[in-house]
Every structure is written in structure tokens, then in C-alpha cells.
Length: 391
Image (tube, rainbow, N blue to C red; front, side, top):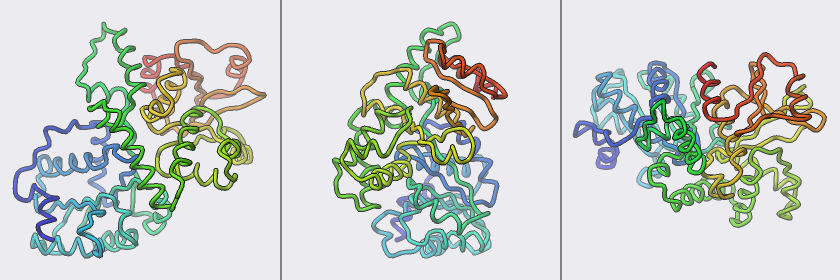
């Protein structure tokens, strides 16, 4: 066990060096302040989106900038076969013994793939209540986290890690665009729309890697968890969802296409959502309208969508990207008299996305008369950046 622990925590023996890792500065800055709280931090999101890398960057920060002793920081991947049969409490206790750490000496523990352990929420509650421990945990399964979080009410903070945005993409590609090279920026942005924001795929640009990511999600987060037997059906369902990204989706219509029951179709839709492959967007309106109306869906990563559908329909890809950028504003779509406006945010900003063109006809009439605090049409990356900088 001691050998395994040292393998996961090389900084116990040597100085830590993560100079080959490109930091996601915007995310890391927020996580640094979260380290100062007592809350259990849950990092969640799509598989291979960079949760483990962020943990390693936080460890480097604690050692280099905060001066935390190396031995007071512990990282482990809980789905390691060598840890089978051990509880989280067993693992933390063994770590304290190996490093001769008294109970009242504060430690930082990083637990990757937390949902690999049964009853993790009760064990984390016990660790939290005992004090002197800061816990940072990760999971790629929204289902398990949502079902277990009530045990940790008031003791946790959930942080979803999204794919790289365009600015981060340029940083990962080591691309600097000067202000006078505006046309180059547009070209690079369209390149980004074809590749998406999964960090390792951005660096490799190897389509086989993206296929591995999708298979990983399907097999580990859906098939293994729910006991799905027909993998081809699952892949066909995902392809249909990617084709419909940015559109209102009817689970019943998909059921007819795939010749499955509506209940099965709804169950599959929920599985894809809980595996962070898609997001569902409700309709704006009164509560009963919001509940009853069909949801729009968006791909969690544009690269996965392009892999499934091919690189086409830039307008739809751009709308998907805009959604990811404003997701924290809790947007809903507007539908009235057969016309649709893309988003109404929580602060009542009405947004229509038109890549390289203007709104017109009946849709324009709806846009102009619809009551909101602010209205904006986003036609390109520059207008989107202006909007995000102001808000």
C-alpha cells in the first residue's frame, strides 16, 4: 500500500514540477480561493475534460505558493484495483500512518473518481465533520453525485469543468493574435469550431483520441452503470442527438426512428445528460409551459458534435458555442406563435445568435416586441466577446 501511495504522490520524495501542463488560468484562479473554505469541492464534468490535471495544478499551487508541506497533500485515484475492498476512511487513515501525521495536523486530500467507492457521501461527511481536512474530489457521473449530495448539504460545492473556450484553445495551441490581425482570429475560431475544447484532443488533433473519449463515456458512465446491452443502439441515439443539437428534441420522435419505447428513449436521453455529453435547455415561460414543453439540446463539446455529424452548419455550431459561454446565466429558449428566439437569460437578456447574418421576418418582429431588460444579436466571435466582457 505504501508503494502505491508514493507512486501517486511523487512530491513526497521529489520536488513537484508540472511545467509541461498548460494551466487553465480562469478556472484555477477560482479554485484557489475555494481552497480557503472548508467546503468539500466536487469537480465534475465530461470524461477527460481535465479534472485530474486541475487537481495536480492545485497541488503544485499549495506546495509552491502556499508553502504547504509536501507530506500534508495526498492524491489518489479511487478506481485503482489495488484499493479494492478499502474504504475512503481506510485509505485516509493509512495515509496518515505512512506520513506520521497527527489527527490535528491539517491535510489536503484529492480523491479522483470519488463515485468508485460505495457510500462515499457518508464517509466524506465523517471526514468533513472530524475537521482538519480539506477534500477535493472528482467524478464524471452526474447521476451519482446528484443522488448522494443530500447527505452533504451545506458541506459541499459542485464545480462543473467545461471544455476549453476559444481563448483557452488559442493558449493551448500557443497562438497569439495581434489586434491588427482580426481576419486571422475569425479563421482560427472556425478551426476551433471543428476541433472543440477537449484539452488533449486540442493538443493531439488525433481523431482516434476523440473516439476513445466517446467510447469511454459510453462504456464506463452508461453501459457499466445502467447495464445497457445494445451498444449500437446507444451510438445511434447519440448520433441523432448530435444531429439535433441546437434544436427542440422530442424523445418520442427519436423512439419512433429507433423503434424503441418512449420510456426507453427518455431513459437514454437522461443517461446522456448525466454523462455530460449533452445539456437540455427548457422553454422560457410560465412554470407549466416550462415543464410541459420539449427541451432544446446542445452538445457539451463542439468537437464531439463535429465528430458525429461532420464539420457543417457553422451557424448551429456557433449557437452551441454561445450556449456554452452563457450557460452560467441559466438561459432558456423563447417560443411564440411558431417563431423562436435562441435565449432568454436569468437576468432577462434576450439573445439571438445569427452567424454572419441578421435576424429578419417574423422572427425579427418577435424579437423586437418581446419584453426583456436587454436585447442583443450575436453574429460573430467579436460580438460575443464584447457581450461577455460587459456581463
